[in-house]
Amino acid sequence: MEDIAIKVDHITKVYRLYNKPSDRLRESLSVTHKKYSKDHYALSDISFEVKRGETVGLIGTNGAGKSTILKIITGVTNPTEGKLEIDGRISALLELGAGFNMEYTGVENVYLNGTMNGFSEEEIDARLPEILEFADIGEFAYQPVKTYSSGMFVRLAFAVAINIDPEILIVDEALSVGDVFFQSKCYHKFEEFKKMGKTILFVSHDLSSVAKYCDRVVLLNKGTKLAEGNPREMVDLYKRLLVNQIEDSNAEGKKDIKVNSEVVSAEMTWMSRMKLNPDVQEYGENIARITDFAILDENGNITNIVEKGKKCSFKIKMDVFEEVEEPILAVTIKNLHGTDITGTNTSFEGESMGLLRPGDCRIATFTQDVNLQGGEYLISLGCTGFIKGEFHVFHRLYDICNLTVLSNRDTVGFFDMNASLQLENPNGESE
Image (cartoon, rainbow, N blue to C red; front, side, top):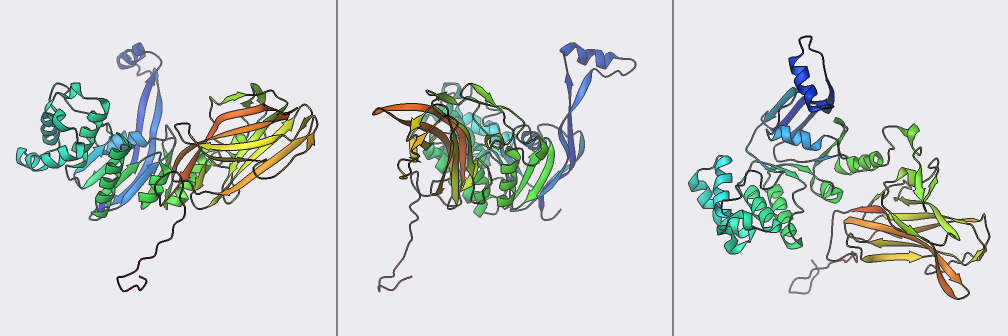
């Protein structure tokens, strides 16, 4: 195990589930060993290795077993079967602030946490200035943590966890704590650890960060290891998993979808293969309606995840129920704060649908370059038009789904203007 920092060897974790608390007692007292519980396999025969100096990502849907395997690796819980081998001191950014005493000051909690991690008082003394500088909470460091805001609490907890010089760093959605400036500092520290050759096990729903930072990715699904390999390939596989294109292709499209307060059969619909917002807001006069919708990646696959620098398409199907002239189909991309980032419609694109009658149907496909920065966005759709010179909303769907943009390179702001750079030396020669 010279080059292996973490070895997960055929690990299974089974939890016993009881219908009511008394069943636990009845089972323990049963002379015939009758079971009053059912077994839940949180993990089933999981195996993978993390080499020293490697950054490995763990991804999967909710309930895949990511948190369970992290708890086993960090010693919070034990496996039911299998073996775990760890070679190196671990710092885990899981539940930030776990073990903090709310009555102690920030500095006292630094010493408490450091002692729990096996450091001597002299070693903590040496690290204290760096920890306090990173946390940047000023004089509050000498106040009881029960007086802290939630932001100050996680800043101190993160600073303690990240500055104890671990050989193995385990990160579970912890890089997004605090404000945007502190998040930037967290990612900078993360990159610093990676450059130093630290071993990192990285769990995140931020697929852009997974693709950017990880050397290898393990994909979990319902307690089993589905696949392991190149980050881009695993993210693509995860995309298919999200829209049920892996486990049961025969079941694809069987779930009904609610559109405009009516149930539309999902069989053969594009939307049935996407991850939709269950609380989508909609309204309109129903003269015409959006009855199907999809996002397509550069290969024409239906997905909620696209890559920056590639092309993607927004495909919208509209059915007409009353005579209408020149209806307009629109798509808008917003950030998570609800701010419109960009969008277009058939009118902007110079396309006219003319006079449409009941029973008519039109499909609009907007294909564009993905120049958005990596991150999460929301998609809204609209079907509008003018009747006797007055603007009417026929059907509008707010935040019908999310759009995840994967990126290896981000710039400032919402868009990347695809800048090119040329450096020259003082003699005027190009570099």
